[in-house]
Length: 119
Image 1: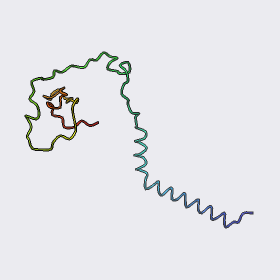
Image 2: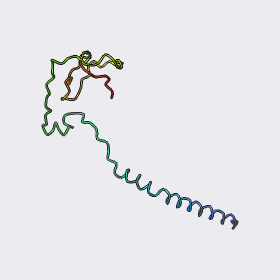
Image 3: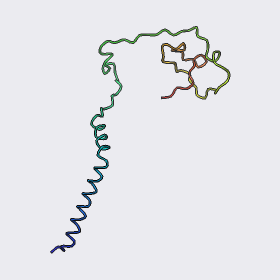
Image 4: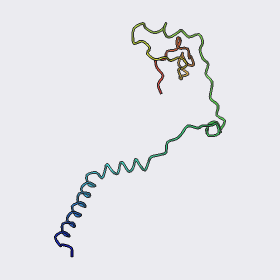
């Protein structure tokens, strides 16, 4: 036979645990609703197309406009002030991606104005 006192203790422990969970839920209800909303609204990450057949723009026949590179641009070292921080990272082979920039498309480190190219 089970001891009635032991049974009452177990029942009290279970009831206290239920009350603690209930109290925790009341205090964190709004936070949990926001969390659940974020989980529900999460969209899978879109990956970059690996081939032209995967790219929706290529499939539709969209062509990118080509921009002209200005060849008669003064080197940035002649335009900028001699003061300031010196270049620490090599930027040879990188170019400005902004078509409105005068140094757009220049990959020569002695001409363009790039300071550092980071991913």
